[in-house]
Length: 117
Length: 116
Image 1 (cartoon, each protein chain N blue to C red):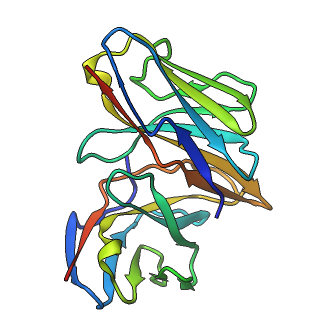
Image 2 (image 1 turned 60 degrees about the horizontal axis):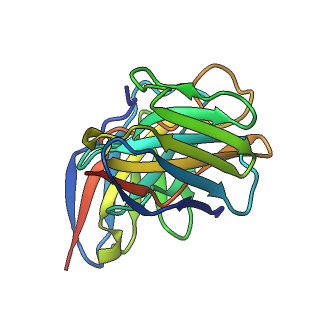
Image 3 (image 1 turned 90 degrees about the vertical axis):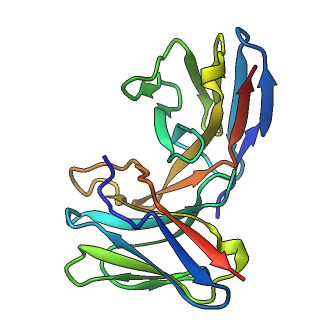
């Protein structure tokens, strides 16, 4: 299957600082990328959907000014958590989707564990 | 809201078949059934998907009832490495096939524990 990478895998930052997480599709071009977050023992919750070259679409309740998403190319999307606070500590997972023939295929990155102290 | 219902947890003895049920009574004609799993602290991993016929690959088999209102994921010989949360998701998969969501919306899934 296709490979999606995330960097970093773990990050610890101080409250008030910003953190950038990169998501790359390594062997395919992703027309759409998704960002999810997951709290302990909870399911994945979609934060936003981004298409290359256009603004991201955020889910209800997700602050677009706090979670900045840039989808600059068909293989790279970044999520920046601005002015991070302890409540932003979570597991962030990106996903990349491609159109293979007439079907959508979606692949997930390994996740980034963010801890804000 | 997730359109599927799964038991919250199941146990399976190592080496035995694990049968994970999923109810999706409101599935639309153009929606496929997808299964993903998430091993602790990793991203979800695709397992298998199907529309109405039974499907099999190197990881698992998917049995979909004739009315498509439920399905069962079968891991034929469960190993300890299969311990994970298994998610059953319905979604539109075919581009241009009509109304519906292409998004993967995760419910609570089934936590499968494979026991030695």
